[in-house]
Image 1: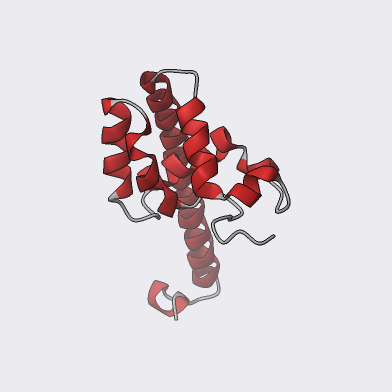
Image 2 (image 1 turned 60 degrees about the horizontal axis):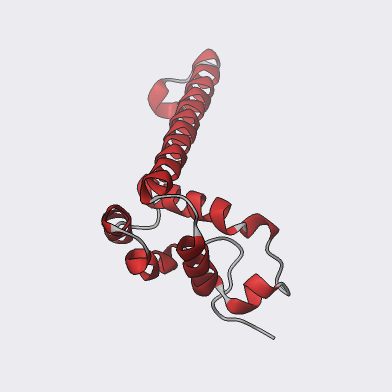
Amino acid sequence: MYQNDAEMLFPARVIPHLRDLRGEQWRQLVTEVAALPETDPRSLAFSLMMIRLDGCLSCQCDSYRAMRGCTLCAKTTIGRFKGSDRELLRLYNEAHKEIETYLASARLDDGRRRMEGGLSAQSEGMTWGEAGS
């Protein structure tokens, strides 16, 4: 059976559906994150947290979870979460730190590649302007 709500990983489009499942702190977080583009680091962090909580990496297309769809899976996971809203916020903040660390290292790696490309072009007698074209 094909489920049109099932995706490989937690989709950001599900975030607004989780708003009213917990207390006020959770509601505020979901409201804030749901308003962001899915490429925003805070939205990515929320998705990373949900991927971990939902077990998306072990979900198979023929599994019970996948057949129910991502929205229902996420709602069930958040509704049954045994910890407090504060614990969920801690998990979100940890994921946000991981995303920020990853993005910072990716920017640093990109800058290094650009410098190495520029240095090799300069050593061949090109100017910086010619190296980019």
